[in-house]
Length: 121
Image 1 (tube, helix red, strand yellow):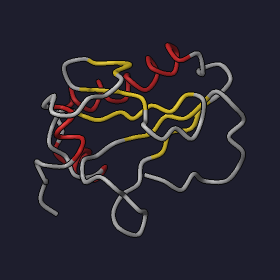
Image 2 (spheres, rainbow, N blue to C red; image 1 turned 135 degrees about the vertical axis):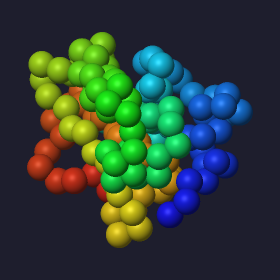
Image 3 (cartoon, rainbow, N blue to C red; image 1 turned 180 degrees about the horizontal axis):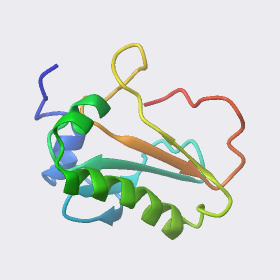
Image 4 (spheres, helix red, strand yellow; image 1 turned 180 degrees about the vertical axis):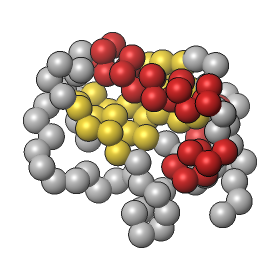
């Protein structure tokens, strides 16, 4: 699948659409989900043009990969959910209901999340 430069996350990265930013560095932008499913629900996106987790893991630089993984922990600490626990989720492809064709990860916390998987990408 080719990268769609008009997807909603690409538009957020270009500043065409607003977001409530919670974290940003050279490689990562993280913001509050507009339809939160938990008290803390943050979306993390790489700033590069990656369609999926497969695409990101295959093509991202070591610096991008490290920054993305480190951002998860930094955000969990800042959100106050690192000690109580949190869930990370990334949907890949049609069957997993990936809604936006830009690799992204959801970070959920702030309550007991139960054993079931969350359904929205």
